[in-house]
Length: 204
Length: 204
DNA sequence: GATAAAAATCGACACCGTGTAGAGTTGGCG
DNA sequence: CGCCAACTCTACACGGTGTCGATTTTTATC
Image 1 (cartoon, rainbow over the protein chains, first blue to last red):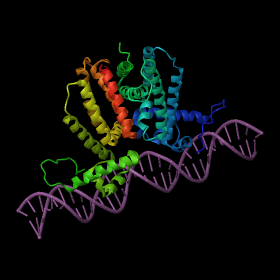
Image 2: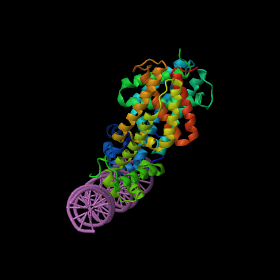
Image 3: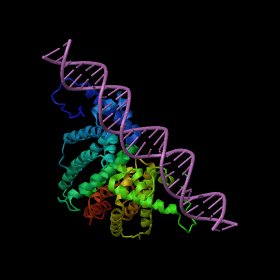
């Protein structure tokens, strides 16, 4: 496995391989949308990227590695976006902003996010990636809950545990809604927002 | 594909095939626990059931059909249990009872339920089965919410939509917790119950 | 308990997808 | 020019799936 180890620092000119790698990932994403993970073969990806199977295996060690890289690329984007979001002190605003951002995320990357969730069990690498992403969300939700007056702590009725449950609610609800339509996604978002507000004691 | 069509009505003596079929399903469940869906081969199942691959294909047309049958068997059990549960009028009691039952379900059948969820996307048959099961839960939750005073309807802050979100919250939370420990399952259940209560406006 | 139909079993085979090996090509740089 | 690394390809071995036809066992019926 030569091609790996993305020592892609300190290089101005883009290697041919970098282009190929991106093409592979893009094709993989497209095929994922068309046929789904199982039906998509390595040959399909290679063909879509304009190379042979053999060449693909120069870049990635396996089909799983390809999709792991795709998930990593997307998840990285999520993290950036998360960091870049302005933090509000007022819980109501914070919740509204978070839900707005989440809708955007799922609109843009719903497919890859769903794939990541589906493969979390099978591919440990992806599971790790996704669990880290979830933790980010859970931490953020916890902070909002605490600011709204929910006691901190891990016990069932305290902020951390509630945040975890709310995170899974949002994940699953968006997972399903994003398969249907943008309109459903919007509605689902409203519902989640409402439950989050109520859970934070901001019912008025 | 001769062996199918379970015209198993009106028959006293149990066919040999019925025993085999059960053995196959049992083995499948055991292997699912040991190695997971992907790693489990048709050969493994056959061997575990004491027959050859060829014989197994007499009973089931594919690996997917085997696990679909397993899911169907389990889900049927869930439905029975659902029907058998006494209905309470008092929302608080109803919620507590429902969560207690859900913990039992996941303790007993967590593995197959997780498998069903994982394969819902890939295997349409299983997706259908699980979606019907979820609908059962959603309907039940909706009823409780309405009895607690939440307005009926499909809009984001009305009972039906909230029930759907709460169902996904419970599903996902239990999905994760049931992989860890019974203790976690219990705690997760408490958290979900609390959020359900608050969402129903039963916060006092 | 003989018999014929149905049920069940088996071994061999064809197919397809994965991943590996090794040989060959290209391009930049001393 | 000649080297080295990046890149690409064809060919192959392996393993799992699902199919087929021949064969044996079970079951129902007389």
